[in-house]
Length: 302
Image (cartoon, rainbow, N blue to C red; front, top):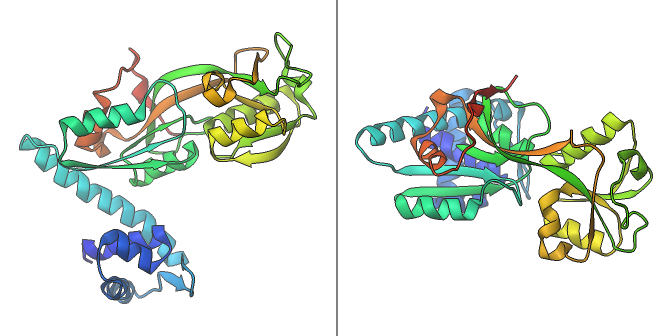
């Protein structure tokens, strides 16, 4: 089995399209298709269900994707380990991040890294924290800046950076806008604007309402901080968000009201693979962070 065949297979699986995968890899579509067919013949199984618009993984394809990502990650780590022994830092660095985190300024961090190591190719993926942690587990990302409210995937460690409480954001004309503090129970029946389920802030909020025994209605679900602020600003609902969101320009006219209790905190962390799977470039990037003085990296997935 050739590594090139696995690389081509992963690209098609991620793009769900042969043409886009070929463009991404900068190879001919005919060559890509031939490579996938060769892999299917070798394995004795169909890996994709093809249609005129897209391709979908078969059961065999889904099983292979997990192992292919792990294999390619190990190969990359082996190459980079040899380079590190030779005093070089090269290869690639795949980083994930959720939007608008505290404790780290990702663009500045990556710019500093690139300035010091221009020979390392940096790839960045922005998504919800749950999906990013799964990508670290599978080897698709070297590390990710996340806020996980739920369980940590097996083989992933969390290194905490910073945490802060959640606040209620609402339109200035909202009845709760003048309150000094709001109880979670008082938000029952309010229409909510919130993030998709894999965002860290959504997980904290869901758990807080469950702990208070309060049902709530999420009318508007978004995947972007600024869209959330716009919707709240137009009076379409209220939102519970990390406290620093109130400092954003689009939140200037909104009211931020503290919530009762400080047990429900939004924790920002670095999600890392097991120590023996850490790429040299990821270790170097970590050295640029101002990390808390504690052995936090020992928080494994259960």
